[in-house]
Length: 342
Image (cartoon, rainbow, N blue to C red; front, side, top):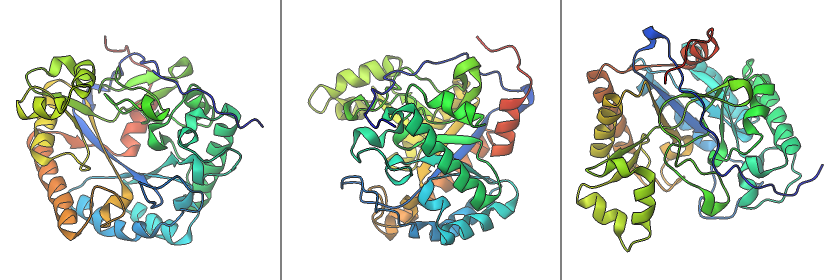
């Protein structure tokens, strides 16, 4: 099998907007990239497979469970093959509403046939046969560990490629959440999602998959300029910072990682007012342990992380936005096709 790198899908196509069931209403989901811990500033390494941060998940899970919020844990190969992390997650799944999905970090996911480098850290850059083989081993590991086949997928580093959606559909996945609305990774050899909006849409061959983009909201007087204006400001000295301070343009992703609470609350209001039916939140599992990601360095940061979620859940409740778990999302995705929204 060739291990030469292939070019990433610079701009994956956006399909027809998904028509949610009428009773679905406005909902939110929380997907956790449940993965090994590693030095985010160091080169990628096959040996970085520690999963000690998973031990901190039960306290986090309890906080969400007390608010009636299910979590979908998108697990990668180290998590799905380590007995301690398997035991923790199996216990969390006993709530009957949380679920397991798949998350592919190719550098720690066999078969190990490619060079470990930045380009190949985007699985979509690998030859389709190798990307598919990694998906096969990941899916088998998850099914063995948790007695269920994953139905929701997210590419690590959002690194989908030209073959990813077809490979997923062939393996029985029904939902993908690899597209990060409004973001671009071309400078690292990854895909370009600047054209992707926040509405769910059908994707892949024969529109077999439901794509749930990670929600990103543009705020400010010039929010209509979106990604194009944001890119232009990035070419100017301190352009984005000045625009933010003047209330002209901010790019706010729905994540507690680097996103200030006041802007996140404004982004929720904006998304709801814009008619986004599913607000898709996300974060990385190692973030809940101080020092394991750049986002949480100490105990004070952990406290801010939890306070962020408390306020966000309060705002969602106040706006009538209810949580949606994996079962509800999959049921909507696999229901008989309705006429698609314009």
